[in-house]
Length: 277
Image 1: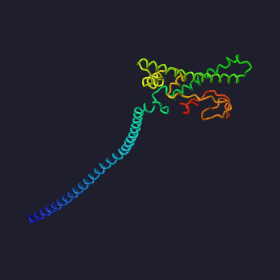
Image 2: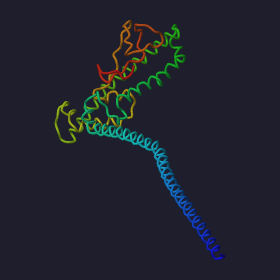
Image 3: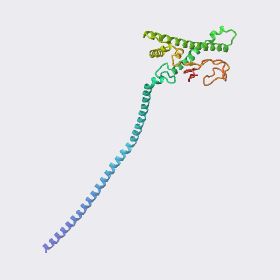
Image 4: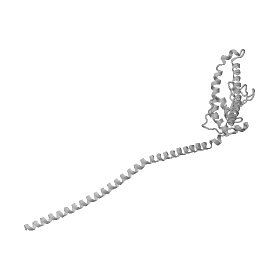
């Protein structure tokens, strides 16, 4: 009887142990399943994290990329402009001699005595020397008895104008004489016999003319005559003539007719474009 009871108790205990083991196995499987799900979630989150990092990296790079593109475009434009400028300079250097030689419409930008620079010196002659002369009107007042200040000023202005035109004409004459003398001297040195026109057309004479012009340090009036063709001072404008305001400006009083010319207009050559108004 006792043995039978022990066997029953042992059987119950065994059944309980089996039940507990089954429960443990179920719990273990549940934990394994949960772990698997957690691992999958972690992997998904890691993937999202990687994707977000890549997205943020790309987003941070995009503005830089666009900026680089803009910089590249700017460099292309800069390079294109420099290239065009270089090609233009090369073209100017290559064709400069053909364009400037004997053609007053084109000038060598490297020439310090080119017409536009001479016109600036001509303007400085008026702004400086002419103005200084007019500031001394009071000094000569005693020599003009019976004239008021405005009449004396007009007399001095007309005298300065005549002096300027005389210098201009004298320079024309002296320039021609110098070129003739220079040409003859060069021809005699080379034991050649030419008439005056042939001498002046000789290449060596032309080069000497260019050298003399390049090395001249005298002021605007002499430089006028070293141009080819010579620069041109406007002819005297008669009194009561209608004022061409594209060529002249009023001196003191405004009006439509000329009383007297203060400072003649300067042209590139006769019937050429205006250089100094």
